[in-house]
Length: 366
Image 1 (cartoon, rainbow, N blue to C red):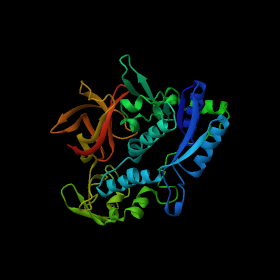
Image 2 (cartoon, rainbow, N blue to C red):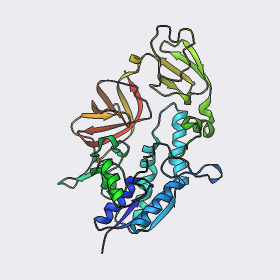
Image 3 (cartoon, helix red, strand yellow):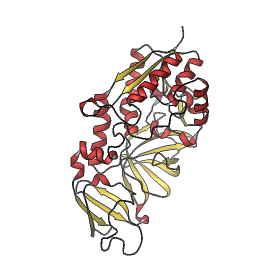
């Protein structure tokens, strides 16, 4: 009797080819798409990975491959665990990554539950990352072969129990190879562009900041812009409009004292409690490390060697660092100062191309 794979099909080329590869390995395949968001009145998303068009594409690919396909409703769970947390983070002056919270709190947990309920043996996704099993049975999460498409950063919270039941078949392929394989198979997603948008924000709606203003209006409380010495240099219409490292859109060019020396100003801190935004020069963005919350380690325990590399943003280059437990929390100290490290983002720890774990940045220090 063949093993069965539950394949999360987003309607993109990666998950389409992942389903095809599992068929080639001899698995029976069941395709599913999670319906995760709908707007007021039941409107479907216009961007991201769960639009009506994406579901149509996923269903078409499933039909082409000859596999059953279902849409699963997880709108309530997504709203509570991802969208509400996203808004709460901005209300706290943080810069969250909702894709990480989606993977952490909805996507993998929900699909692993359905994997068992539907009698499937493994869960398959189209993420660009790899899973390897060591000689001692430990699962290792590795960056993708195609580093330009690597998604291991957003999977850093996966543990041994999860990795034992997950397959990431396209992690060994480049994006060009994935598209070429889809074309060979005659899949309609072969040339489909990658989605770059948040599924719950949509296109033409003013972006995520407009979304926050509509759904979490408390974040639009007006306040003051001050320099690093506390001198007021401007006003703003809502802290939601600012994030650490931001240079454009500060509205300071015409303000006395805001840029008298000709140096550009950047957002260096956002205090949501007082609706105060602090700006400074580029050197004021330098930090020596960060403190983490929601920390997890892929192996189930921290690395014995504190020397690691760290990514503090999805597209950031890995930087030398150490990780250690200090005063009851996990602290990452950078080998050299890093710029624009934003609380709310994830700090993901690597050794070479292996993900060791990570957590959410709750504070930085000079």
